[in-house]
Amino acid sequence: MAQLHCKHVALTILLTLAGFAAGAADSLRVSLLTCSPGTEVWSQYGHTAIRVQNFTSGADVTFNYGLFDFSSPHFIWRFCTGETDYLVAGTSTQWFLQGYAEEGRSVTEQELDLTPEAREAITGALVVNCLPENRTYRYNFFYDNCATRVRHMVEDHCGELIDYRTEPVFGTLRDALKYYTRNYPWSGFGISLLIAAPADRPSGFEEEMFAPEVMMEGFATAMIGERPLVSDTCVLVEKDPSKVPASLPLPSPQLCFWALFAAVLAATVVGLYKGRQLRGIDIALMLLLGVAGVILFFFNFFSAHPATSPNWLLTWANPLAMVLGIMLCFRSFRNSRAASLLLALWLLPLAAGAVAWIAGVQYFHPALLPLMLSVAARSAVCIPGLLNTRKA
Image (cartoon, rainbow, N blue to C red; front, side, top):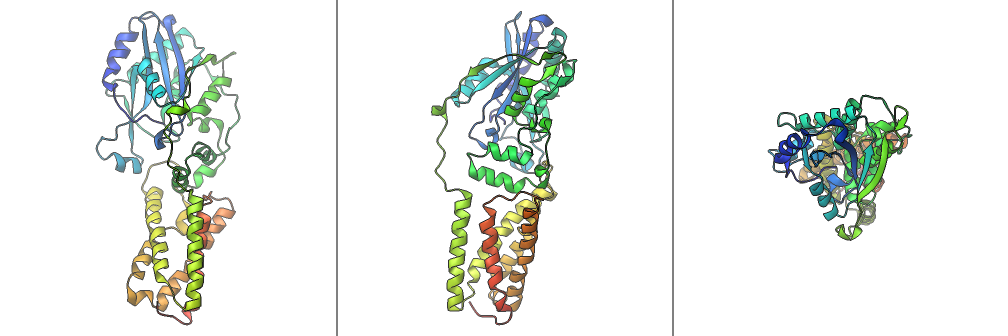
C-alpha cells in the first residue's frame, strides 16, 4: 500500500502552509485518489491519497499517508513486531502522478461533493497532520493504513454523516488478501501462513475498506446527506502494462510441495522395501516445520500485527519440531525407540490441525496439504519401528 520513498517530506510545510493560507474555503477542491495495485509486496493492495487544490493560490497538493523509510533504525524488526511507523506528507500532485505513471499504475480521481466549510476543515486538518510533531503514525495493515486514514479524515471533518450503501465485497478479510495476491502465489502463500483465524471471521464493508479499491467503490455509491458523496470521477493516469516488470516464472507453492510429497513418498516406499529408516528425510521435514514454527510462534505471541493470533498452524508447525529435528541429528537418538515414538506421535498434532482446517476454524493454504501428508507418511512409517527399531 505504501510507496518506498520518503522524498519530498521536507516540502510538506512549504507546500501546505504557503499554498493554502491564501485561499478562501470556496476555492478549495478535495478529491480521493486511488492507485491500482503494483508488483512489490507493499503495493499489491493499491494505494490511497487525498488531493486538495486551491484555485486562488494555484496550489495542488496530494497528501500521502503511505510513506515509510527502509533505512530507519531497526525497520525490519519493527515491521515484524507490528511497530512500523509511517509518515504523512504533502507532495506536488504532478510528482505524485508521475511516480505512478512511471510504474504503469493507474490513478483514479473522485471529486468529493463537500460543503465549503467541510473542504476547509479537511484541508486544515491535513496541514496539522503534516506538522513534524504529528506526521508519524503507527501503521496497522487492516485498521490504520493509507486508506483508513483518508477515510477517517473525510468522515471526521465533513460535518455530515456518510452513508455507505455497498455490501461486503469479499465476506472475510482472508478473501480480500487472497484476491489481491492471486497473481503472486508465493507472497500470497507467505501471508496466508502469518494471517490467522481472526481473518476468517465475516467482515463488514467498512472493515474491507482497508483495501483502496474497495474504498473507492464505497465512496462511489455513498451518500452524504441527500446527495452522492462523489460528484465526478476521472482517470488521471491510465494503466500501462508495458511498464510493469515481468515476474520470474517460479513454480507455484502447490506444485513445489506436491513434488516434495511425491519424493518423500517414493523414498519412504523404497526405504520400507530395503528396511531402512531414512532419518535424513525426517530431519529435513522437522527442521522445515521448526523454522516455520518459530516464525509463526513469534507472530502469534509477540507481534502487534492484527489477525496473527490465534494461529492454528502452530498445532503441527511449531518450534518443538525444530527441537526434534536437532535431536535426530545425533546418531544415538535417531536410532532409538524414543525417536520413533516422538515421530509417530506427530500424527496427533497433524490430526488436530486437519480438524481445525476441515471445521473451518482457520483457512489453510492448499499447498500445506502435501506438506502435511509428507510428515504424516514419515510419522506413520515409524509406528512399526516402535516394535523393531532398525538402524539407518
